[in-house]
Length: 321
Ligand code: XMP
Image (tube, rainbow, N blue to C red; front, side, top):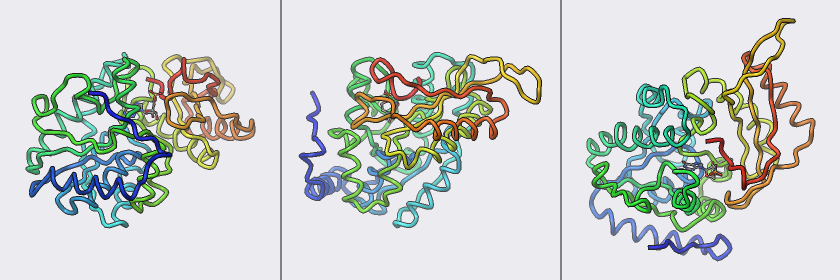
């Protein structure tokens, strides 16, 4: 069955939230639900909605997969603590890096992350908690791109004929499935989330692994994490839809301390977009690009080249894998 889209401009957020809260309470009944918060816009909005509907009957976890942005687990937990939501941080780095070892193909990487998350790590957490439902922030763009065969988004199952109950042992509820990012942000505001949660730059489910070309190792994630922090620092006030740093697999010749080195390359992407379906590179001031490049080569000695993507989506996509 095709999901009916709700456009942000047609959304009466308060009314929609009232109805969804009623529906979630009815569905979950006296039982428990669980959700994984990644700190991205969609999972933050689902967390706020789920807690409004279910209160303490929703357990919220942050899976620390080792692929998140700098300081993220503690930052996200603290932000939600301020609005009365307890977040349990689950350490799971080893499982994710073990699953990603040796994989370079983008779709295989996505599949390894999906299986590790839903099967290896989350199944035990859900079963131990006694929850019947996993509440997650899948949105229409995730479904569209997966069904069209562009990218297998980490959180899409039923539209691919996968029954989560059979595959993982629990059911999945997707209250945001009719929206795109602009609609989700409107809901976040109406739910009273701080702007820091719902106006953030979007961040993908596979996290920084979506921004490492080639093998994902702790050392390569550490490089892209530092570059991401620098890009976000300089671009947070750019007004762009999304901005990110990518670590390339190819190396190039550079110079450090008067010596030849064969170093790494970071690519910066910064996008103007409404809903991520199409996007154009932001026309950033050259000074901003220079500050980012300087920051990156000083903070990450292994990097000798920083480039800026000037290709639109399509044919590019927002993330690198
Ligand atoms: P692409 O790279 O396909 O991304 O142009 C479109 C939007 O979706 C985000 N993205 C994801 N979000 N799970 C998600 O929840 C995923 O697997 C995933 N992959 C990409 C991306 O950041 C952009 O906003």
